[in-house]
Image (spheres, rainbow, N blue to C red):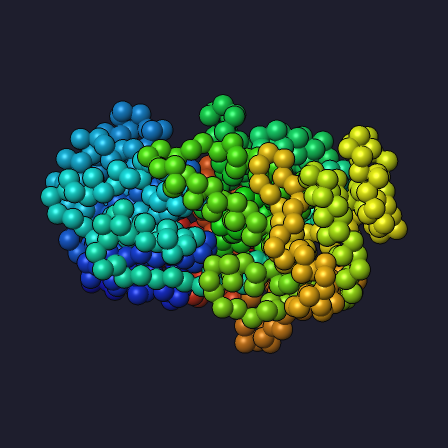
Amino acid sequence: MADLTPLDILRTTFGYSSFRPHQAEIVDAALAGRDVLAVMPTSAGKSVCYQVPALALAARAGALTLVISPLISLMADQVGALRQSGVAASYLNSTLSAGERASVLHGIASGALALVYVAPERLDDPAFLETVSARGVGLLAVDEAHCISQWGNDFRPSYQRIIEFLEALPARPPVMALTATATRAVRKDIAAALGLSDPFTVIASFDRPNLSFAVSRPRGGAEKDRMLVAFVRQRATLSGIVYCSSRRAVEEVCDLLCDEGLAATRYHAGLPAEERERNQEDFLYDRSRVMVATNAFGMGIDKSNVSYVVHYNLPLSLENYYQEAGRAGRDGTKAECLLLYSPGDVHTAEFLLSRSEPREGLTPEQIETLAERDAERLRQMVFYATTTECLRAHILRYFGEETPAYCGNCGNCLTDFEEVDATTDALKVVSCVARIAQRGRSAGASMIVDVLRGSRGEKVLRRGFDTLSTYGIMADVPAARVRAILDELVFRGVLARTGGDYPTIALTEISRAFLRREAPWDEPFVLKVAKGAPRVERAVAAPAKTRAATDVSELDEVGQELYARLSELRGELAREQGVPSYFIFSNATLVDMCAKRPRNADELLGVSGVGAKKAERYGELFLEKING
């Protein structure tokens, strides 16, 4: 392998004919000894960026590549997949016994291992430092590098030990920092915290064309449950994740799906470690099709065949949402991302933010700045949940990327909206907030809706809000429409939503100008309203003869039947070996196999994702099915 180029390694080991965007430049920079900072979305192929150099460095100089990874599950997943491709890889973390750790250290010292994943806590081990120093570290890759930044969305104090480990090595290796989401401030923090020297920097497009985005707005808990059950049942044979904001919600939603006869399991920090591990394995091995979890689950999970991600509750930020939603469709096949948004979720999210543990070593001013940043992130998340504009464009603009205003593959682009003049109703909503404020009182969004619609609820009457001049003036307007107008007024800055445990709706500097119809608020207040159910995807596709199939739905009838048979064979092999089915071949590889229908070993190597080792191990079995 010493004479193989990076592209040769990619083809023979991993079975891909070419690098994805940015991968080749990153690999070349690392092999040239440069530091690298790469911000690439989930499924962009970050792991290849250090796995290919690892094999090249091991072949050329016997050097070791270390990968710092925050999650044990990620290590086991990636190492298992690498071994299927014939790569000498292992990992070091707290799950290993003393004997197993000694075996890994021996593999490092003897040169048998090319690549080792290590938890940041292991960097403090003197025996580990001594062993890798003697072997020689050719590359240090820091995965999920945003964990090193206190300004990131998943800060890990243990990551700040990496710089000390680097300084303790006899010679500093090139450092590659990789993350899926990082703002400008976080990128600057990563570079400083790792001591990156003039790093080769890549900020890839955040777009994931294979993902479709949608937001549904159920009117209450019962309707939300019905929507979720219907969505999952229609995809009962597919693998999916349902994210909830609390442990209690995870338990309730998991019980709901199981009661409906759906194969679901659960994951949250309150479960015993043994159960979490067992449930995660059930999901990875497709024994349970649905994982219901808090955000404690998923970072670094390399399960490639997740076909959908549902957010049962509102995430705290678009960074969190896009990272979690991005766990769908990692193999490039079509996948769905659904957010079930209820206005009450905003209150829950604000409560969670108010109860978050303060970060160590920060000044009061920094703590206040972080709190303000978190509040603004949540505000942007609410805008996403309530916008009628293209959802993909909304996300990409948030990350600073220019993008067309229409994608043709999200719930909003596929919905016919009509513009209605809601000026009169909007004035009524703002007037109601003003009347409450005149009494020195405040109210939340639900209370304002109740007042405007003339509710005889106990809280309305007890506060005397039934005596307001605006009481009942929108009695003939559906509650959902009133709430939509209120949300739009907040989005446009005419009203504001306060923070705290009991958020209320307040006037802003703009409110008076709006009520007086002063410019620019003298124009009609136009609201976009859905006319019906979303249409089917209408994005223009290239002719089938010129475009490779990327999804089962794009195969012809024979191809779809073959896909089912190959999937069955893959499942049998996975069960025999005790590994997840996507370790054998990903869904995308099976789709390509069914589209190309190779007849011999040489043609099989032309299928995306079939490397030399897998062709040798599984080729005869899969060719037999195809030729049959």
